[in-house]
Image (tube, rainbow, N blue to C red; front, top):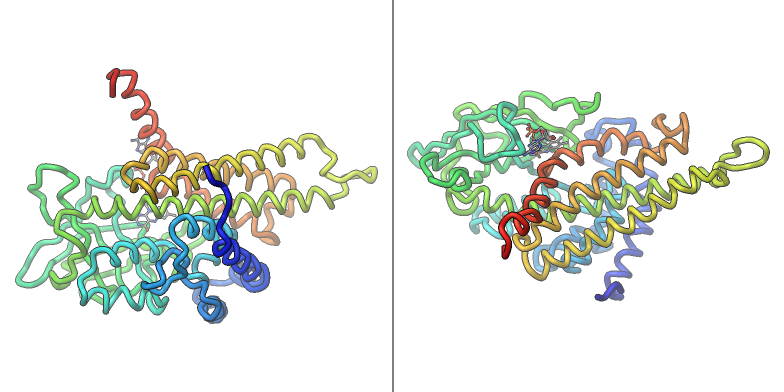
Length: 401
Ligand SMILES: Cc1cc2nc3c(=O)[nH]c(=O)nc-3n(C[C@H](O)[C@H](O)[C@H](O)COP(=O)(O)OP(=O)(O)OC[C@H]3O[C@@H](n4cnc5c(N)ncnc54)[C@H](O)[C@@H]3O)c2cc1C
């Protein structure tokens, strides 16, 4: 087992840390008070600086325009960048673009690469991923009503999607639609199709308000109607009927990204908790830091964050060395475990801050609202727990397996 971090990655992590402190955190008060569109010029300027420092797109190899530090290096970067809600956008590693880039890099035709992949990597356009439907359980996405039927050289798409994150202002959506309804396996019925947001029949109904806040632009969650939405068959991404197989490839590395981001948020919340506890006088010349209950929260948080980090890095190593399929149990473990650790640590940090904790004067209340969804998207806690438990139980129910 090797826990040291190589020199190159260490240098990059230090550069990111410094940039976060000097350039990213100071932008947060603007972000918290404004719509995303209003923030864009300031965020755009920060993005340019990141590009000049050659820190743009740490998830990508150099030949695709990224930093080129490998998957484990990227996982470590995610923790630093994920400490701020605007970090991933500023560094060009934000979901859902990062996942879409991954799919396009693997499956796009030369024309698709030129039109969609290149500008997406450069941060000139944004994208979204449109799979979940209001009428069906997103936890079992093989059940969907959206269809794409061939007509001449086109696909004609009809369906209703929601929670298509970042749909507002996206140049295109990667849409999951049933193209092969007769296929025996439910996993072979849907395909991924690139749908430009300007295509006839693409209708963004609304940005869904989440926890009382209807975000806009990159920070939106769109409800979309595809009404006889017509796109060329050349917009098929990857082989027909392989949508779920490709989606699965996208989710493994994506969960490493999210889980390391959760750890970044938890770590920052813990640091805020400690700093506040150390300075807050609660009478008699004593600070909150002298109270054993606060010390317990700090120690528990430290242990849980450390355990989470090791678990995620182990899962990342397994994906890197054995592939996402072999690592599916570890991926499920980290998804529910780290999301809950993050939420517990944010909650303790808020409690230590008292009234200040629920105000918008610190980032904590934003974390509390925004990150609750972590236990739902990319597989709800319960779904991942069932995956882990079933795999373990199988060995007892069918000895020898
Ligand atoms: C902030 C946010 C962003 C999202 N972004 C996107 C996006 O960009 N693109 C996209 O396509 N979708 C997106 N989604 C949708 C997300 O993938 C779904 O919400 C998720 O898959 C759960 O589906 P559902 O909401 O239909 O809940 P359901 O599937 O109806 O499940 C409801 C609840 O039932 C329980 N449950 C479900 N199945 C089981 C089971 N097998 N065993 C035990 N309990 C179970 C869980 O507690 C779950 O929370 C996003 C969602 C959120 C909240």
